[in-house]
Image (cartoon, rainbow, N blue to C red; front, top):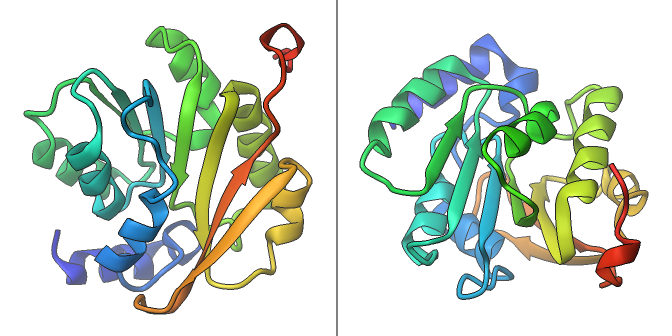
Length: 196
């Protein structure tokens, strides 16, 4: 996808796109380094954008791993749909991540091992952020991870409300430099898992 297309979409909807340039390959590597691809059965990505993180996920996943992508921007979605048309076990959704619960039910996904998020939480309305995170923690399996990046730690307190453990790493080889937050709740007996 051409950078000028990304920039144009940013100009049209800056709050929804959240950055003037796509994420770097270095940031993509940092985003997936905590993913155990050999054991992951279900991986979800929020805010796919140009597919920088998606390329890495699809490169390292097991062939049987189901990947579900959420992209709300119609232009990005159409471009990504063409780009990944030959991929197996890939579900592409042109909708908000707020509706994750609806789509996992529709496609028979029982739980999620990892959520990789490119969503701009710093510019999302608070109620939208809360809705997405509430639904995410209910769907994550025991020990599952929610991995996101931000440009500042301004929203860390938001993630602290939902996750007991947050590992923070910085990636300076991105414009602007980014902070990766790998968020996880403690493993709990499955019969005690949060109810929806």
